[in-house]
Length: 136
Length: 395
Image (cartoon, rainbow over the protein chains, first blue to last red):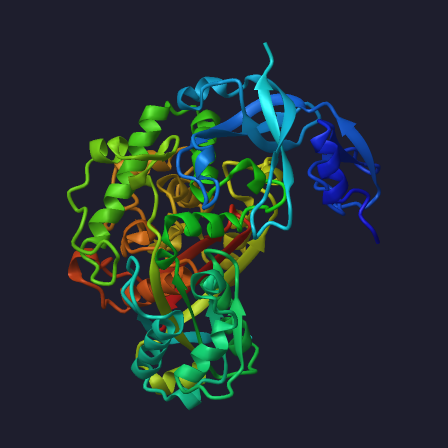
């Protein structure tokens, strides 16, 4: 059985600022990033839907020690956002000073853009990542 | 299922970068474990070797075969287990299964890692490979970042002021440093016994709010254990330690664990399996070597294992309830924080400590008096692999 949505197509859409997810025909749960089975009921009757890409910050951190090859990126802020449609999504946060990121961020409403991570010798190519900005 | 005993254990010193190869490290622990079990290499029917990153550490794949040959277990089947930081616990659990099934009577399990040798940059990169490579690593997630995010989430979920939580977390590190400072096999043996809350909070911030002293070190090291059927064990030792419960569970991306975070659901499932198999409950456990890769990880672990109520374990540490003489002795070895965390060996190192504690063989400063029942808890990735073992005195 083939996936309804694979990384390649999810990634290409994300590079166009479109967040694709999968809606379960059995239970209605949204799964993102894509998998072959619904993350809630494990059903496989899924359809591709476009998500709004907005939601609330649930947690975050500002990273000061990066992986090899990404030292130039620090400091940067990672967030986990609870999307309007339910699932959580990891991405970066821009539009705030990473050094001033505090727990006041939790609950803030954000909207999604994207930025490409170019990849390294281990990563089989580039990957887009969600980049969230506070909605004012 | 047959009863399975640990008959002999060994561990190299866990350390920073050192000169021995991965095969050599494993061979030294394995040979000692075989010798203290009154056995010869040819008595070992199969090897179960935890190792996560030898490919990156030394360009060595299939390390288990070279390890088997090095120690004289010629032509014995040897399997490698990769479950990030839980690799060795997976190896011990599967070794247990093979003996419990009756297929083998005596086997060797353990693990090895040279994470410190890689240096911080490559170690950080390769540890991040245990996060989802396509959907979460692009955001720059690292291991400290995962537990840093869980720290804020823990504070928010249980409504604990961040400063208070950070002070409680510092108490976790201080306790671990104190125990590790008296453990000659620990990376920080003889060090950091004078750690203070102020020093923990004031050290370099790795990922907000986690400081250097909230984080375990990168480590080199190996550990090995010999498992035997009850009949074989009775001929080899008067102090068999039986593995009476095991559990293992897996899950996917950190974001897909959102229904439970900051709890780690895989741990709740894994530990429940172990408790049920052993017919024990959390209050029956005297000592637990758990996965304190970060100070917050200890708080989260003790709650999912059922030792303390959700959101209260920081207070337990403040009251000494997680220390020797308290409700349950957590990480009398010094834990990952102070004993060290050579990831592929860590679970076997936990078994090493629990077995020696139950036998009353550790240094008096950190011996848990009268310990009869112990547990190990090992977490791989950002909760992707969880393994728990319960061990009991067999005499």
